[in-house]
Length: 260
Length: 314
Image (cartoon, rainbow over all chains, first blue to last red; front, side, top):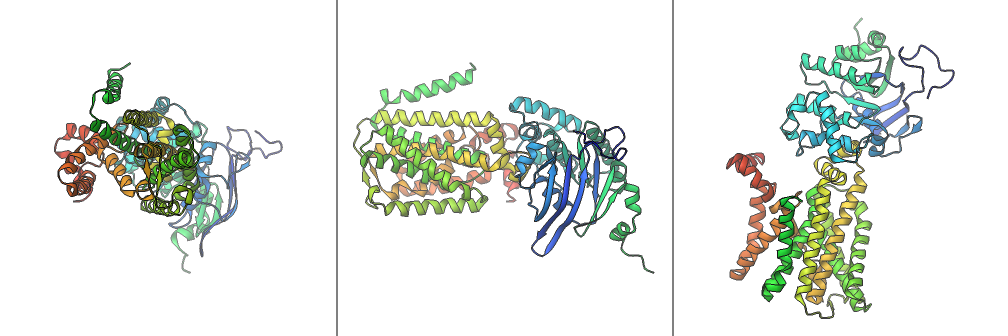
Protein backbone atom coordinates (compact mmCIF):
# COMPACT_ATOMS: atom_id res chain seq x y z
CA UNK A 1 0.00 0.00 0.00
CA UNK A 2 3.00 2.35 0.36
CA UNK A 3 3.26 5.04 -2.26
CA UNK A 4 6.62 5.97 -3.69
CA UNK A 5 7.82 9.49 -3.05
CA UNK A 6 5.76 10.22 0.08
CA UNK A 7 7.68 12.36 2.53
CA UNK A 8 9.53 10.34 5.19
CA UNK A 9 9.23 11.31 8.82
CA UNK A 10 5.80 12.82 8.44
CA UNK A 11 4.06 9.76 9.84
CA UNK A 12 4.34 8.03 13.18
CA UNK A 13 7.86 6.69 13.61
CA UNK A 14 7.13 2.97 13.88
CA UNK A 15 5.06 2.92 10.69
CA UNK A 16 6.20 3.11 7.13
CA UNK A 17 5.07 6.10 5.17
CA UNK A 18 1.81 5.07 3.53
CA UNK A 19 -1.21 6.37 1.71
CA UNK A 20 -3.90 7.82 3.95
CA UNK A 21 -6.48 5.32 5.15
CA UNK A 22 -9.08 7.95 5.12
CA UNK A 23 -9.52 11.38 3.62
CA UNK A 24 -12.16 14.10 3.71
CA UNK A 25 -12.19 16.82 1.06
CA UNK A 26 -14.06 20.11 1.46
CA UNK A 27 -16.87 18.37 3.33
CA UNK A 28 -19.90 20.58 3.88
CA UNK A 29 -23.31 20.01 5.39
CA UNK A 30 -26.07 22.61 5.49
CA UNK A 31 -29.29 22.39 7.50
CA UNK A 32 -31.46 24.91 5.68
CA UNK A 33 -29.72 28.22 6.50
CA UNK A 34 -27.26 26.81 9.03
CA UNK A 35 -23.91 25.54 7.84
CA UNK A 36 -23.13 22.85 10.42
CA UNK A 37 -19.92 21.68 8.76
CA UNK A 38 -18.13 23.89 6.28
CA UNK A 39 -15.28 22.99 3.92
CA UNK A 40 -13.57 20.54 6.28
CA UNK A 41 -10.56 18.73 4.81
CA UNK A 42 -8.16 16.34 6.50
CA UNK A 43 -6.65 12.91 6.10
CA UNK A 44 -5.67 10.15 8.50
CA UNK A 45 -2.77 7.70 8.23
CA UNK A 46 -3.35 4.13 9.45
CA UNK A 47 -2.85 3.74 13.18
CA UNK A 48 -3.23 7.42 13.87
CA UNK A 49 -5.40 9.01 16.53
CA UNK A 50 -6.99 12.27 15.49
CA UNK A 51 -8.61 14.31 18.26
CA UNK A 52 -11.63 16.35 17.23
CA UNK A 53 -12.43 19.23 19.57
CA UNK A 54 -14.45 22.40 19.53
CA UNK A 55 -17.05 24.26 21.60
CA UNK A 56 -20.63 22.97 21.84
CA UNK A 57 -22.45 23.19 18.53
CA UNK A 58 -19.21 23.33 16.55
CA UNK A 59 -20.34 20.51 14.23
CA UNK A 60 -18.29 17.64 15.67
CA UNK A 61 -21.09 15.10 15.85
CA UNK A 62 -22.38 16.22 12.44
CA UNK A 63 -18.95 15.49 11.00
CA UNK A 64 -18.96 12.01 12.52
CA UNK A 65 -22.46 11.38 11.13
CA UNK A 66 -21.31 12.45 7.66
CA UNK A 67 -18.40 10.01 7.83
CA UNK A 68 -20.44 7.10 9.21
CA UNK A 69 -23.21 7.71 6.70
CA UNK A 70 -26.18 8.59 8.87
CA UNK A 71 -26.17 12.06 7.26
CA UNK A 72 -25.52 12.87 3.63
CA UNK A 73 -23.05 15.66 2.85
CA UNK A 74 -24.26 18.72 0.95
CA UNK A 75 -20.89 19.08 -0.76
CA UNK A 76 -17.48 17.46 -0.62
CA UNK A 77 -15.95 14.02 -0.82
CA UNK A 78 -15.06 11.21 1.57
CA UNK A 79 -12.42 8.65 0.58
CA UNK A 80 -11.69 5.44 2.46
CA UNK A 81 -8.88 3.09 1.44
CA UNK A 82 -8.64 4.84 -1.88
CA UNK A 83 -12.30 4.65 -2.85
CA UNK A 84 -14.96 7.28 -2.68
CA UNK A 85 -17.63 6.36 -0.13
CA UNK A 86 -19.80 9.45 0.35
CA UNK A 87 -22.60 7.99 -1.80
CA UNK A 88 -22.65 4.64 0.06
CA UNK A 89 -25.35 3.85 2.64
CA UNK A 90 -24.26 3.57 6.27
CA UNK A 91 -24.36 -0.23 6.39
CA UNK A 92 -21.99 -0.49 3.40
CA UNK A 93 -19.53 1.79 5.15
CA UNK A 94 -19.78 -0.44 8.23
CA UNK A 95 -18.90 -3.45 6.05
CA UNK A 96 -15.90 -1.58 4.64
CA UNK A 97 -14.63 -0.95 8.14
CA UNK A 98 -16.03 2.24 9.62
CA UNK A 99 -17.47 1.96 13.11
CA UNK A 100 -18.84 4.62 15.40
CA UNK A 101 -20.26 5.19 18.85
CA UNK A 102 -23.13 7.55 19.56
CA UNK A 103 -22.87 10.47 21.96
CA UNK A 104 -26.55 9.93 22.75
CA UNK A 105 -26.09 6.23 23.38
CA UNK A 106 -28.10 3.80 21.30
CA UNK A 107 -28.16 0.42 23.01
CA UNK A 108 -30.64 -2.23 21.87
CA UNK A 109 -32.61 -1.84 25.11
CA UNK A 110 -34.48 -5.15 25.23
CA UNK A 111 -31.48 -7.34 24.38
CA UNK A 112 -28.85 -8.68 26.75
CA UNK A 113 -25.50 -6.90 26.86
CA UNK A 114 -23.95 -9.90 25.11
CA UNK A 115 -26.50 -9.91 22.29
CA UNK A 116 -26.03 -6.16 21.84
CA UNK A 117 -22.35 -6.65 21.17
CA UNK A 118 -22.95 -9.79 19.07
CA UNK A 119 -24.87 -7.63 16.55
CA UNK A 120 -21.61 -5.80 15.88
CA UNK A 121 -19.76 -9.09 15.37
CA UNK A 122 -22.49 -10.41 13.04
CA UNK A 123 -22.85 -7.39 10.80
CA UNK A 124 -19.64 -5.37 11.05
CA UNK A 125 -16.53 -5.43 8.90
CA UNK A 126 -15.52 -8.92 10.02
CA UNK A 127 -19.11 -10.16 9.46
CA UNK A 128 -19.36 -13.38 11.45
CA UNK A 129 -22.05 -15.62 9.89
CA UNK A 130 -22.59 -17.87 12.87
CA UNK A 131 -24.40 -16.56 15.95
CA UNK A 132 -22.51 -18.60 18.53
CA UNK A 133 -19.14 -17.57 17.10
CA UNK A 134 -20.39 -13.96 17.07
CA UNK A 135 -21.14 -14.36 20.77
CA UNK A 136 -17.60 -15.61 21.37
CA UNK A 137 -16.17 -12.55 19.71
CA UNK A 138 -18.60 -10.38 21.66
CA UNK A 139 -17.29 -11.94 24.89
CA UNK A 140 -13.76 -10.87 23.98
CA UNK A 141 -14.91 -7.29 23.40
CA UNK A 142 -16.79 -7.27 26.69
CA UNK A 143 -13.71 -8.49 28.54
CA UNK A 144 -11.67 -5.75 26.90
CA UNK A 145 -14.11 -3.05 28.00
CA UNK A 146 -14.63 -4.52 31.47
CA UNK A 147 -18.27 -5.34 30.99
CA UNK A 148 -18.13 -9.12 30.83
CA UNK A 149 -19.63 -9.62 34.29
CA UNK A 150 -22.85 -7.90 33.15
CA UNK A 151 -23.23 -9.77 29.86
CA UNK A 152 -26.54 -11.43 30.73
CA UNK A 153 -28.28 -8.28 31.90
CA UNK A 154 -30.63 -6.32 29.70
CA UNK A 155 -28.94 -3.29 28.18
CA UNK A 156 -31.56 -0.91 29.61
CA UNK A 157 -30.60 -2.04 33.12
CA UNK A 158 -27.11 -0.55 32.74
CA UNK A 159 -26.10 2.74 34.31
CA UNK A 160 -24.43 5.64 32.47
CA UNK A 161 -20.75 4.60 32.60
CA UNK A 162 -21.57 1.01 31.68
CA UNK A 163 -23.66 2.23 28.73
CA UNK A 164 -20.58 4.09 27.49
CA UNK A 165 -18.60 0.88 27.78
CA UNK A 166 -21.34 -0.96 25.91
CA UNK A 167 -21.22 1.56 23.04
CA UNK A 168 -17.50 1.00 22.81
CA UNK A 169 -17.80 -2.79 22.94
CA UNK A 170 -20.46 -2.80 20.20
CA UNK A 171 -18.27 -0.71 17.92
CA UNK A 172 -15.18 -2.84 18.65
CA UNK A 173 -17.04 -6.05 17.83
CA UNK A 174 -17.48 -4.70 14.29
CA UNK A 175 -13.70 -4.91 13.91
CA UNK A 176 -13.51 -1.56 12.15
CA UNK A 177 -10.40 -0.14 10.57
CA UNK A 178 -11.55 3.37 11.38
CA UNK A 179 -13.32 3.90 14.68
CA UNK A 180 -15.19 7.15 15.39
CA UNK A 181 -15.66 7.76 19.12
CA UNK A 182 -18.18 10.44 20.01
CA UNK A 183 -17.58 11.53 23.62
CA UNK A 184 -17.09 8.14 25.21
CA UNK A 185 -15.62 9.81 28.31
CA UNK A 186 -18.44 12.24 29.07
CA UNK A 187 -19.87 11.61 32.52
CA UNK A 188 -17.03 9.35 33.64
CA UNK A 189 -14.94 10.03 36.75
CA UNK A 190 -11.16 10.51 36.71
CA UNK A 191 -10.36 6.84 37.30
CA UNK A 192 -12.76 5.69 34.60
CA UNK A 193 -11.32 8.24 32.17
CA UNK A 194 -7.82 6.84 32.72
CA UNK A 195 -9.18 3.36 32.04
CA UNK A 196 -10.75 4.48 28.76
CA UNK A 197 -7.58 6.32 27.69
CA UNK A 198 -5.57 3.15 28.29
CA UNK A 199 -8.16 1.14 26.38
CA UNK A 200 -8.07 3.50 23.39
CA UNK A 201 -4.27 3.24 23.27
CA UNK A 202 -4.56 -0.52 23.41
CA UNK A 203 -7.04 -0.46 20.50
CA UNK A 204 -4.72 1.76 18.48
CA UNK A 205 -1.81 -0.59 19.10
CA UNK A 206 -3.87 -3.34 17.51
CA UNK A 207 -3.82 -1.29 14.31
CA UNK A 208 -7.07 0.64 14.44
CA UNK A 209 -7.27 4.24 13.33
CA UNK A 210 -9.30 6.47 15.59
CA UNK A 211 -11.12 9.76 15.39
CA UNK A 212 -11.95 10.83 18.91
CA UNK A 213 -14.34 13.61 19.92
CA UNK A 214 -13.71 14.62 23.50
CA UNK A 215 -14.19 17.51 25.87
CA UNK A 216 -11.82 16.17 28.52
CA UNK A 217 -8.80 18.23 27.46
CA UNK A 218 -6.14 16.38 29.42
CA UNK A 219 -7.19 13.04 27.97
CA UNK A 220 -7.44 14.26 24.38
CA UNK A 221 -4.05 15.94 24.63
CA UNK A 222 -2.24 12.80 25.73
CA UNK A 223 -4.12 10.55 23.29
CA UNK A 224 -4.03 12.44 20.04
CA UNK A 225 -1.32 12.41 17.41
CA UNK A 226 -3.02 15.39 15.86
CA UNK A 227 -5.85 17.69 16.81
CA UNK A 228 -8.56 19.12 14.59
CA UNK A 229 -10.49 22.09 15.95
CA UNK A 230 -13.95 23.00 14.69
CA UNK A 231 -15.69 26.28 15.47
CA UNK A 232 -19.07 27.19 13.96
CA UNK A 233 -18.50 24.36 11.49
CA UNK A 234 -15.21 25.82 10.28
CA UNK A 235 -11.91 24.03 10.59
CA UNK A 236 -9.81 26.59 12.52
CA UNK A 237 -6.75 24.49 13.35
CA UNK A 238 -5.15 21.15 12.48
CA UNK A 239 -1.80 19.92 13.78
CA UNK A 240 0.21 18.65 16.75
CA UNK A 241 -1.81 18.96 20.00
CA UNK A 242 0.53 21.35 21.82
CA UNK A 243 0.80 23.69 18.87
CA UNK A 244 -2.92 23.69 18.24
CA UNK A 245 -3.77 24.40 21.87
CA UNK A 246 -1.41 27.44 21.85
CA UNK A 247 -3.04 28.81 18.70
CA UNK A 248 -4.63 32.19 19.52
CA UNK A 249 -7.64 31.41 17.31
CA UNK A 250 -8.32 28.21 19.27
CA UNK A 251 -7.97 29.96 22.61
CA UNK A 252 -10.34 32.63 21.39
CA UNK A 253 -12.93 30.03 20.30
CA UNK A 254 -12.91 28.47 23.75
CA UNK A 255 -12.39 31.47 26.03
CA UNK A 256 -13.46 34.47 23.96
CA UNK A 257 -11.40 37.44 22.79
CA UNK A 258 -8.93 39.03 25.20
CA UNK A 259 -9.94 42.57 26.05
CA UNK A 260 -7.29 45.15 25.23
CA UNK B 1 -33.34 -35.31 19.37
CA UNK B 2 -34.31 -33.45 22.50
CA UNK B 3 -37.46 -34.20 24.46
CA UNK B 4 -38.76 -30.74 23.54
CA UNK B 5 -38.56 -31.60 19.87
CA UNK B 6 -40.39 -34.91 20.36
CA UNK B 7 -43.05 -33.06 22.32
CA UNK B 8 -43.58 -30.66 19.42
CA UNK B 9 -43.76 -33.52 16.91
CA UNK B 10 -46.25 -35.30 19.19
CA UNK B 11 -48.44 -32.19 19.38
CA UNK B 12 -48.43 -31.76 15.60
CA UNK B 13 -49.29 -35.46 15.11
CA UNK B 14 -52.15 -35.20 17.60
CA UNK B 15 -53.49 -32.11 15.85
CA UNK B 16 -53.17 -33.81 12.47
CA UNK B 17 -55.26 -36.72 13.75
CA UNK B 18 -58.20 -34.54 14.81
CA UNK B 19 -60.20 -34.97 11.52
CA UNK B 20 -60.04 -38.75 12.01
CA UNK B 21 -61.72 -38.66 15.41
CA UNK B 22 -63.22 -35.22 15.97
CA UNK B 23 -66.73 -34.03 15.15
CA UNK B 24 -67.51 -31.86 12.11
CA UNK B 25 -67.87 -28.72 14.25
CA UNK B 26 -64.57 -29.45 15.91
CA UNK B 27 -62.83 -29.70 12.53
CA UNK B 28 -64.45 -26.46 11.39
CA UNK B 29 -63.41 -24.70 14.55
CA UNK B 30 -59.94 -26.19 14.06
CA UNK B 31 -59.64 -24.77 10.55
CA UNK B 32 -60.34 -21.22 11.70
CA UNK B 33 -58.18 -21.53 14.82
CA UNK B 34 -55.23 -22.94 12.83
CA UNK B 35 -55.45 -20.37 10.08
CA UNK B 36 -55.71 -17.41 12.48
CA UNK B 37 -52.70 -18.86 14.34
CA UNK B 38 -50.80 -19.01 11.04
CA UNK B 39 -51.79 -15.41 10.31
CA UNK B 40 -50.65 -14.35 13.79
CA UNK B 41 -47.35 -16.16 13.22
CA UNK B 42 -46.89 -14.36 9.90
CA UNK B 43 -47.65 -11.04 11.60
CA UNK B 44 -45.07 -11.97 14.24
CA UNK B 45 -42.27 -11.87 11.63
CA UNK B 46 -42.97 -8.23 10.84
CA UNK B 47 -44.58 -6.96 14.06
CA UNK B 48 -42.91 -9.16 16.68
CA UNK B 49 -39.38 -9.54 15.34
CA UNK B 50 -38.88 -6.47 13.17
CA UNK B 51 -41.00 -4.10 15.28
CA UNK B 52 -43.15 -2.88 12.39
CA UNK B 53 -46.76 -3.05 13.55
CA UNK B 54 -48.56 -3.76 10.30
CA UNK B 55 -52.26 -3.28 9.69
CA UNK B 56 -51.80 -4.29 6.08
CA UNK B 57 -51.43 -8.03 6.57
CA UNK B 58 -55.14 -8.42 5.90
CA UNK B 59 -54.40 -6.91 2.46
CA UNK B 60 -52.04 -9.78 1.69
CA UNK B 61 -54.59 -12.22 3.05
CA UNK B 62 -57.23 -10.66 0.78
CA UNK B 63 -54.97 -10.62 -2.25
CA UNK B 64 -54.11 -14.28 -1.64
CA UNK B 65 -57.83 -15.04 -1.54
CA UNK B 66 -58.60 -13.03 -4.67
CA UNK B 67 -55.62 -14.35 -6.61
CA UNK B 68 -56.74 -17.90 -5.88
CA UNK B 69 -60.39 -17.18 -6.67
CA UNK B 70 -59.74 -15.31 -9.92
CA UNK B 71 -57.43 -18.05 -11.20
CA UNK B 72 -59.98 -20.73 -10.33
CA UNK B 73 -63.17 -18.94 -11.47
CA UNK B 74 -61.97 -16.87 -14.44
CA UNK B 75 -58.98 -19.00 -15.40
CA UNK B 76 -60.50 -22.44 -14.64
CA UNK B 77 -57.26 -23.45 -12.95
CA UNK B 78 -56.75 -26.00 -10.18
CA UNK B 79 -56.58 -24.95 -6.54
CA UNK B 80 -52.81 -25.46 -6.42
CA UNK B 81 -52.20 -23.14 -9.36
CA UNK B 82 -54.67 -20.67 -7.88
CA UNK B 83 -52.84 -20.64 -4.57
CA UNK B 84 -49.61 -19.94 -6.45
CA UNK B 85 -51.28 -17.00 -8.22
CA UNK B 86 -52.58 -15.66 -4.90
CA UNK B 87 -49.17 -15.78 -3.29
CA UNK B 88 -47.55 -14.19 -6.35
CA UNK B 89 -50.11 -11.38 -6.30
CA UNK B 90 -49.61 -10.65 -2.59
CA UNK B 91 -45.82 -10.81 -2.80
CA UNK B 92 -45.83 -8.52 -5.84
CA UNK B 93 -47.99 -6.05 -3.95
CA UNK B 94 -45.70 -6.22 -0.90
CA UNK B 95 -42.68 -5.66 -3.13
CA UNK B 96 -44.31 -2.72 -4.88
CA UNK B 97 -45.58 -0.90 -1.80
CA UNK B 98 -42.95 -2.14 0.65
CA UNK B 99 -40.29 0.30 -0.56
CA UNK B 100 -42.13 3.51 0.23
CA UNK B 101 -44.15 2.21 3.20
CA UNK B 102 -41.19 0.72 5.06
CA UNK B 103 -39.51 4.14 5.15
CA UNK B 104 -42.17 5.17 7.66
CA UNK B 105 -41.81 4.31 11.30
CA UNK B 106 -44.01 3.62 14.29
CA UNK B 107 -47.57 4.97 14.07
CA UNK B 108 -46.96 6.38 10.58
CA UNK B 109 -46.21 2.92 9.26
CA UNK B 110 -49.33 1.56 10.97
CA UNK B 111 -51.52 4.29 9.45
CA UNK B 112 -50.08 3.81 5.96
CA UNK B 113 -50.72 0.06 6.05
CA UNK B 114 -54.26 0.70 7.28
CA UNK B 115 -54.74 3.03 4.32
CA UNK B 116 -53.45 0.34 1.97
CA UNK B 117 -56.13 -2.03 3.21
CA UNK B 118 -58.90 0.51 2.53
CA UNK B 119 -57.52 1.36 -0.90
CA UNK B 120 -57.18 -2.26 -1.97
CA UNK B 121 -60.77 -3.01 -1.00
CA UNK B 122 -61.95 -0.06 -3.12
CA UNK B 123 -59.85 -1.14 -6.10
CA UNK B 124 -61.12 -4.73 -6.04
CA UNK B 125 -64.74 -3.54 -5.72
CA UNK B 126 -64.38 -1.93 -9.13
CA UNK B 127 -62.79 -4.77 -11.06
CA UNK B 128 -65.17 -6.73 -13.24
CA UNK B 129 -63.20 -9.96 -13.30
CA UNK B 130 -62.99 -9.85 -9.49
CA UNK B 131 -66.79 -9.75 -9.27
CA UNK B 132 -66.91 -6.06 -8.29
CA UNK B 133 -68.55 -5.62 -4.88
CA UNK B 134 -70.88 -8.60 -5.45
CA UNK B 135 -68.08 -11.12 -5.01
CA UNK B 136 -66.96 -14.39 -6.55
CA UNK B 137 -68.29 -17.89 -6.04
CA UNK B 138 -65.67 -20.62 -6.07
CA UNK B 139 -66.22 -24.27 -7.03
CA UNK B 140 -67.44 -26.29 -4.10
CA UNK B 141 -65.13 -28.84 -2.52
CA UNK B 142 -66.60 -31.02 0.22
CA UNK B 143 -63.87 -32.20 2.52
CA UNK B 144 -63.15 -30.16 5.60
CA UNK B 145 -60.40 -32.60 6.51
CA UNK B 146 -58.30 -31.39 3.59
CA UNK B 147 -58.70 -27.73 4.58
CA UNK B 148 -57.88 -28.65 8.14
CA UNK B 149 -54.65 -30.41 7.16
CA UNK B 150 -53.70 -27.58 4.80
CA UNK B 151 -54.17 -25.03 7.58
CA UNK B 152 -52.12 -27.14 9.95
CA UNK B 153 -49.36 -27.53 7.35
CA UNK B 154 -49.30 -23.76 6.83
CA UNK B 155 -49.03 -23.13 10.56
CA UNK B 156 -46.19 -25.64 10.87
CA UNK B 157 -44.39 -24.07 7.92
CA UNK B 158 -44.78 -20.54 9.33
CA UNK B 159 -43.56 -21.68 12.72
CA UNK B 160 -40.53 -23.44 11.24
CA UNK B 161 -39.70 -20.22 9.40
CA UNK B 162 -39.99 -18.22 12.60
CA UNK B 163 -37.93 -20.80 14.52
CA UNK B 164 -35.20 -20.43 11.90
CA UNK B 165 -35.45 -16.64 12.09
CA UNK B 166 -35.07 -16.71 15.87
CA UNK B 167 -31.68 -18.42 15.56
CA UNK B 168 -30.30 -16.98 12.35
CA UNK B 169 -28.17 -13.99 11.51
CA UNK B 170 -31.18 -12.69 9.57
CA UNK B 171 -33.29 -12.78 12.73
CA UNK B 172 -30.60 -11.02 14.75
CA UNK B 173 -30.71 -8.25 12.16
CA UNK B 174 -34.50 -7.98 12.37
CA UNK B 175 -34.39 -7.78 16.16
CA UNK B 176 -31.67 -5.11 15.98
CA UNK B 177 -33.97 -3.09 13.68
CA UNK B 178 -36.79 -3.45 16.20
CA UNK B 179 -34.64 -2.35 19.11
CA UNK B 180 -32.96 0.64 17.40
CA UNK B 181 -33.03 0.98 13.65
CA UNK B 182 -30.44 3.79 13.44
CA UNK B 183 -27.94 1.85 15.53
CA UNK B 184 -28.60 -1.29 13.46
CA UNK B 185 -27.90 0.59 10.22
CA UNK B 186 -24.60 1.99 11.46
CA UNK B 187 -23.55 -1.43 12.75
CA UNK B 188 -23.88 -2.89 9.27
CA UNK B 189 -27.43 -4.24 9.05
CA UNK B 190 -28.79 -3.73 5.54
CA UNK B 191 -32.01 -2.39 7.04
CA UNK B 192 -33.95 -1.70 3.81
CA UNK B 193 -33.39 -5.23 2.53
CA UNK B 194 -34.05 -6.90 5.88
CA UNK B 195 -37.33 -5.05 6.35
CA UNK B 196 -38.40 -5.84 2.79
CA UNK B 197 -37.65 -9.56 3.26
CA UNK B 198 -39.63 -9.62 6.51
CA UNK B 199 -42.56 -8.00 4.71
CA UNK B 200 -42.37 -10.43 1.78
CA UNK B 201 -42.31 -13.44 4.11
CA UNK B 202 -45.30 -12.14 6.08
CA UNK B 203 -47.15 -11.37 2.84
CA UNK B 204 -46.51 -14.81 1.36
CA UNK B 205 -47.71 -16.72 4.41
CA UNK B 206 -50.77 -14.49 4.85
CA UNK B 207 -51.68 -15.00 1.19
CA UNK B 208 -51.64 -18.80 1.55
CA UNK B 209 -54.03 -18.50 4.49
CA UNK B 210 -56.28 -16.28 2.38
CA UNK B 211 -56.29 -18.71 -0.53
CA UNK B 212 -57.15 -21.68 1.67
CA UNK B 213 -59.93 -19.73 3.35
CA UNK B 214 -61.43 -18.58 0.02
CA UNK B 215 -61.65 -22.13 -1.34
CA UNK B 216 -63.01 -23.42 1.95
CA UNK B 217 -65.77 -20.81 2.30
CA UNK B 218 -66.48 -20.90 -1.50
CA UNK B 219 -67.51 -17.26 -1.46
CA UNK B 220 -65.42 -14.11 -1.55
CA UNK B 221 -66.33 -10.42 -1.48
CA UNK B 222 -64.22 -7.31 -0.78
CA UNK B 223 -65.69 -6.73 2.68
CA UNK B 224 -64.75 -10.17 3.97
CA UNK B 225 -61.41 -10.42 2.11
CA UNK B 226 -60.01 -7.08 3.26
CA UNK B 227 -61.49 -7.13 6.74
CA UNK B 228 -59.31 -5.03 9.02
CA UNK B 229 -60.74 -6.63 12.17
CA UNK B 230 -58.97 -9.80 11.04
CA UNK B 231 -55.71 -7.86 11.17
CA UNK B 232 -56.59 -6.57 14.62
CA UNK B 233 -57.04 -10.18 15.72
CA UNK B 234 -53.57 -11.10 14.44
CA UNK B 235 -52.09 -8.23 16.46
CA UNK B 236 -54.00 -9.03 19.66
CA UNK B 237 -53.22 -12.73 19.52
CA UNK B 238 -49.54 -12.18 18.91
CA UNK B 239 -49.21 -9.50 21.58
CA UNK B 240 -51.19 -11.61 24.05
CA UNK B 241 -49.14 -14.73 23.42
CA UNK B 242 -45.72 -13.11 23.19
CA UNK B 243 -44.47 -11.01 20.27
CA UNK B 244 -41.00 -11.89 19.02
CA UNK B 245 -41.16 -15.46 20.32
CA UNK B 246 -41.56 -18.68 18.33
CA UNK B 247 -44.55 -20.14 20.18
CA UNK B 248 -46.19 -16.96 21.49
CA UNK B 249 -48.52 -16.32 18.53
CA UNK B 250 -49.74 -19.94 18.59
CA UNK B 251 -50.40 -19.88 22.32
CA UNK B 252 -52.15 -16.53 21.97
CA UNK B 253 -54.24 -17.58 18.98
CA UNK B 254 -55.34 -20.92 20.44
CA UNK B 255 -56.21 -19.53 23.88
CA UNK B 256 -58.01 -16.43 22.63
CA UNK B 257 -59.98 -18.19 19.90
CA UNK B 258 -61.07 -20.83 22.43
CA UNK B 259 -62.22 -18.18 24.91
CA UNK B 260 -63.98 -16.08 22.29
CA UNK B 261 -65.69 -19.18 20.86
CA UNK B 262 -67.09 -19.92 24.31
CA UNK B 263 -68.16 -16.32 24.83
CA UNK B 264 -69.69 -16.02 21.36
CA UNK B 265 -71.93 -18.99 22.04
CA UNK B 266 -73.23 -17.22 25.16
CA UNK B 267 -73.30 -13.52 24.33
CA UNK B 268 -72.13 -12.31 20.94
CA UNK B 269 -71.54 -8.70 22.04
CA UNK B 270 -69.37 -9.90 24.89
CA UNK B 271 -66.93 -11.49 22.45
CA UNK B 272 -65.91 -8.22 20.82
CA UNK B 273 -65.71 -6.38 24.13
CA UNK B 274 -63.51 -9.20 25.35
CA UNK B 275 -60.84 -8.55 22.69
CA UNK B 276 -60.70 -4.87 23.60
CA UNK B 277 -60.29 -5.68 27.27
CA UNK B 278 -57.63 -8.30 26.62
CA UNK B 279 -55.44 -6.01 24.55
CA UNK B 280 -55.51 -3.22 27.17
CA UNK B 281 -54.72 -5.57 30.06
CA UNK B 282 -52.09 -7.50 28.12
CA UNK B 283 -50.20 -4.42 26.98
CA UNK B 284 -50.14 -2.83 30.44
CA UNK B 285 -49.48 -5.85 32.63
CA UNK B 286 -47.53 -8.20 30.40
CA UNK B 287 -45.96 -6.43 27.41
CA UNK B 288 -43.98 -9.58 26.64
CA UNK B 289 -47.15 -11.68 26.39
CA UNK B 290 -47.89 -15.07 27.93
CA UNK B 291 -44.44 -16.38 26.99
CA UNK B 292 -42.69 -13.76 29.12
CA UNK B 293 -45.34 -13.92 31.82
CA UNK B 294 -44.29 -17.47 32.68
CA UNK B 295 -40.64 -16.51 33.05
CA UNK B 296 -41.28 -13.19 34.81
CA UNK B 297 -43.78 -14.64 37.24
CA UNK B 298 -41.47 -17.47 38.25
CA UNK B 299 -38.68 -14.98 38.90
CA UNK B 300 -40.54 -12.17 40.62
CA UNK B 301 -44.06 -13.37 41.46
CA UNK B 302 -46.61 -10.57 41.67
CA UNK B 303 -43.81 -8.01 41.35
CA UNK B 304 -43.70 -8.79 37.62
CA UNK B 305 -47.05 -7.02 37.09
CA UNK B 306 -46.16 -4.12 39.37
CA UNK B 307 -42.85 -3.56 37.56
CA UNK B 308 -44.64 -3.45 34.22
CA UNK B 309 -47.19 -1.00 35.57
CA UNK B 310 -44.40 1.20 36.85
CA UNK B 311 -42.76 1.15 33.45
CA UNK B 312 -45.92 2.72 32.04
CA UNK B 313 -45.97 5.23 34.95
CA UNK B 314 -49.45 4.17 36.06
